[in-house]
Amino acid sequence: MRNSIHEVRLNCGITMPVMGFGTFSFENDRETTEKAIHMALKMGYRHFDTARIYGSEPAVGNALTEAILDRTVEREDIFVTSKLWGSDHHNPVSALQKTLQKMSMEYVDMYLVHWPVKLKPWVSYAIPKEEDFEELDMESTWAGMEKCLDMGLCRCIGVSNFSSKKIQGLLDFASVPPAVNQVEMHPMWRQSKLRETCADDKIHVSAYSPLGAPGNAWGSTAVVDNPIIQSIALKHKATPAQVALKWGLWKGSSVIVKSFNQHRMKDNMGSFDLKLDDQDFLQIDKLEEWKIMRGEFLVNETTSPYRKIQDLWDGEI
Image (cartoon, rainbow, N blue to C red; front, side, top):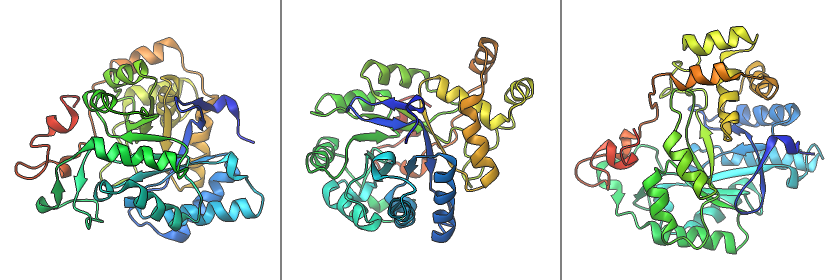
């Protein structure tokens, strides 16, 4: 059974485990990913995060199906998130059906719009070329997402990498509000304005790169190497990763952690038991802010709807 203390109730009425297991890796080795998921299930992880563009959907689906068949878990006890890539904005229903086919699943629990960017239908790679962009019509994209929900292909819909302004714009026409906004968030990118905007509309903020993505090529060790984070960890006989995760959880967010290393996977789960004090939170709130995933690959001066990096984040950078 899932531990209800470690869950959050979303505006769509369902509950989501607050510790998510991320499955993006540059190698995207199917066997390694499947092994990590089986290990994660044994450790108590119940929320698994994937996306079409990660290429990890088949591995996630296969590992979870095996675990369900051998009665390790029931389908109702796990929470699966996947994401709509920019080239699928034309037809979210068909995209999600393909995802479900790859995963051998009847539904995902959460389906997110990965970025507020629309690409040509054939763009199946992560870094778009100049000629790959199309004009974003979020209203028709969102209508497609709502249709996925109506058809029972997912239990909840949401967004990712949306600024406060883009959330407000979406709410102007959405019949169903997004349940989640999954964004970069960690002690050095605290998202206070966005968290406030989302809280006003009961949209849950989910944190990706809650440790600053130290294991990714585009990531950084700046968060876990920060002397303040390290001194707080030392004070509580914890690890810097546990401090960073506890900070995110304390702020009311869920955290999507990504490590296939057994020791670190266990370590991340240990953040639930850590207690930080007011002094710790005050110190973290004084840290200099620095966004790591800036999305520069979606900005250009000719074809992208975002000519400058400020346009993508609406000044929240």
